Amino acid sequence: MLRCRDGSLYTGITNDLAKRLLRHDAGTASAYTRARRPVRLVFQERHPDRSAALRREAAVRRLSRVEKLALVRGSR
Image (cartoon, rainbow, N blue to C red):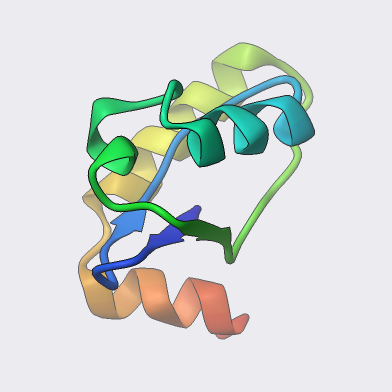
């Protein structure tokens, strides 16, 4: 999960986090984050396969902002 310059939170998946962060910083990874740079990594999880990662991403996206912030703080 990334925290954008405007305070919003962006959730996504990747199999190469370092490369994906570089792309976000360059403005080539996502139209959403391109307009809200710089971004900062605030939360990450590892999953055994892409399917599990996609399911978790969908679940995190359904969380409220308060719940996402609690996840970032380690409360969940």
